[in-house]
Image 1 (tube, one colour):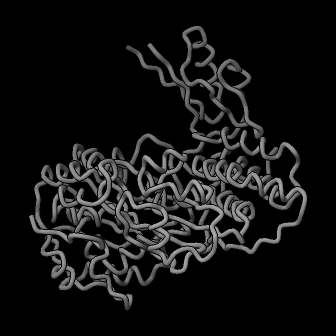
Image 2 (cartoon, one colour):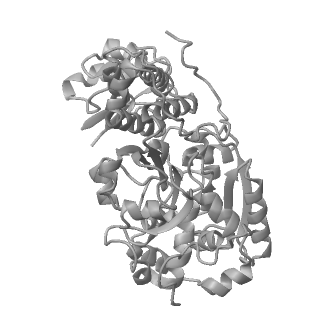
Image 3 (cartoon, chains in turn green, brown):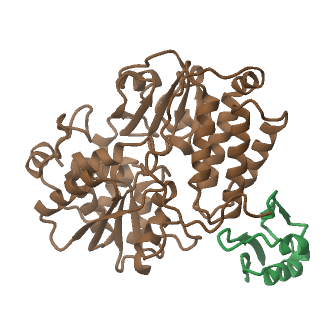
Length: 68
Length: 428
């Protein structure tokens, strides 16, 4: 099972909750928009990644989970 | 299979110097009647020819045709003649002067993907092009195929293929988040092939004369010919058809030669790359050569910058234009490009700080891949090459006033049509 993070840059408004909840994978640029340095989510961070995706006010943070 | 022209011009054969559109009779006298290959035959011959898309993305054309043909049901073809790259003129030349060649290619591509509807999209100020196209469509007998000419907005990103599809669907002419891509779900949800006019014109020739003929010019990896719009410090700026593999010096010679010693060349338009003239003269018109200096042909734009002009000043104007042309949808593009443009403007004005260049490069790296379309990526590539090639100019501007002659790279030839959701400078 693998999971990857993506941002829909059109809907993202730079609230920044994702970087608060998941600083291990997400940081913010100079204007507060998320930079995902590593899209692949390690298993131990999956729970936090789900929380971050759920917490995004504009549902711009997408977690693609490949269930096999 | 008929015998094609033995040498150049191929696409531009029979072009009237008086600017008139070629008539159907003249077109058929030069190229013969339109062949009717089966979809499989057409895709095969295009595949063997090695033809790649000429709108800038350089994608193998046969694969693009195949991706829509596989889906088949209710497919649509959009001929994307937006040509929003300010320094490009090849698509308008083809559509206004050789409309039947492009329409032949459209008919062939439509039959390969099972489309019964073709839309030709051009910029709304291109009234001459629209007249030529409508005249050409009116005299053709393409069976049940419905061909319509549609005009649309002309901002830089309005020509991006998802922006074109979104506009056709009644939306603003702005890129959308992918997936789905147009070939999956495009015009009215149908599989949609969006193709550049030159690519279609090349298909019209390949279908007639075959892949072997096509490969008689060019190199093994870049077969055939290409239309290149050459401008700047050359004696005869314009659109020229040249074989792949042609040395840079011969490209410039085709446009009358340079009018002064050159400082640099901009290859590939405003999403392209500056190359200093010394390195540029070692290049041929071929992907492997261009890739060795980090560039690609893009939509076939070449701008020669003379030594009397200032590349830093010109680059600052272009990056300012690209920042203005952001669709205004994605934060990293809106704020990042504006910050980059302001910083490069400061460097050009000689008021940039010591670390200004470093900041620009960090921002450029950070905005890559973070827009819905490739606008930030292209702008980042442009600005990175500008900072590298014009490093001596940046240093010189710190110490003395720039007295160079403006080269006047086109930046506001056509007004942008933007649906601004975000505006730089209004937040944080």
